[in-house]
Amino acid sequence: MNKVSIIIPLHNAVAFVNEAIDSCLNQTYANIEVIVVENGSKDGSWDCLQGYKDSRLIVHQIEAASATIARNYGYKKSTGNYIMFLDADDVLSLDKVENQMALFKVFGNDVLISCAWGKFTKTITEALFTPQNVWNDFTPVDWLVTSWSGGGMMQTGCWLASRKLIERAGLWNESLLQNPNDDGEFFCRMILNSKSVKFDKKSLLYYRIPQADNVSQNRSRTAISSLLKSYLSYQTEILKTENSKRVKLALGYNYLSFIYQYHWYYPELSSRAKKYFYALNIGKMWAVGSEKFQIMVNLFGFKCALFLTSIKRYFI
Image 1: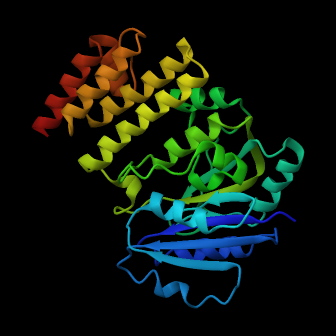
Image 2: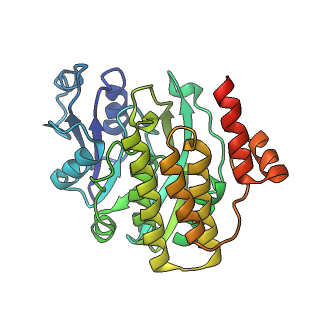
């Protein structure tokens, strides 16, 4: 039986990590190892790991308070033929590994397998699963174009991949500091290096709504600059595979969404994203964002709509 390594970066998640670990150790698939890499916690997260006596749980401690560094460290310590990255506050359905490993037997090791995910705050019984367009089988480019064009996204713990695929795609990008999209950049490369994306209809990932100090909620200049850098990585990687109008439109959607969200906070980064958008040569900016903003764009144009929302925010 092939071994599956589940890698969990742990940073200030003492209230949640035991539930995440238990959902791994209680999997119906027997041959697993769970590698937890504690990185720079201040809340006693390391201490809460000491009560486990299960030999399948391997814990490490590093100083760098970085999820990407912790994931890469855990990967290098892992021994499994298949790899899953799970956040320390999320929970797996107990048959997830078994279901996804069964799909590898059908489709081979060059595919990347995902599953449904639902949001919850306190208990997984309250999780809400809202189907998205990406909850399907796709070719690599089709998955990315669908996702970037507003068709949804996939949480980190949804994916299961072969070690072979990760070696081909490369490890997590440690230069993307504080990045709320470090998983998006990593799995973009994973997807493009796969034969296809397969959707596991049986399994579930329970995604805990992030706390205020979670990296996905980080809005520092470093984080948002790094986010824009991840979109440039998208562009570099996908154009190697397909340089087409539909791909460029999907890339443009990323830049427009960035401008919509951050023009008020970081106008210089917004201006940079605007240059990247126009360099794609796909025409004028189109409507993204909230329904009200889209109406303003259709009436007055994108730039004017941004100006009007900036005035409104200034006087509130």
